[in-house]
Image 1 (cartoon, rainbow, N blue to C red):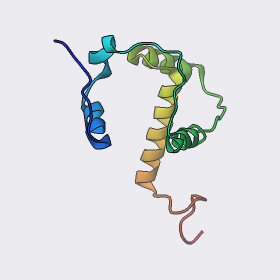
Image 2 (image 1 turned 30 degrees about the vertical axis):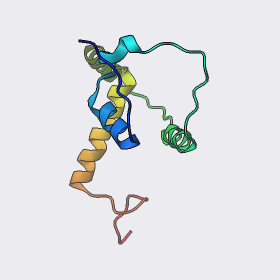
Image 3 (image 1 turned 180 degrees about the horizontal axis):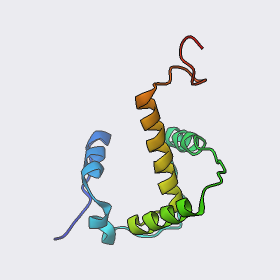
Length: 111
C-alpha cells in the first residue's frame, strides 16, 4: 500500500486526519531535518504550562513495593515512576469516592 499525506483544505480536516492516522503507517515519508521547528506561541505556552504542573516528591517506600513497581513496569514496558504515579492516582480516586474533598485544604465546608 502506498501511503501518502493528503493536502488539507482546513485545519479541521488536518486534525481529523492525524487523529485517525497512525504515523507508523507513514514512517517512510518522514525525513530528518536540521531546520528549526517553529511552534505557534499558543502551543509553546501550552507545553510550558504542562511541564510546570508536575512537582517532584520524595518518598521512602518498602523495598518490596519498589521491587513490585519495577516488575510491573518491565512487564508493561514503562518506567517504574509511571507505576508509582498510577498507584497514587488510583489511591486519590479511591479516597475521593469514599470522602469527597470540597476545598483546597481537604476539609469539608464546615472546616
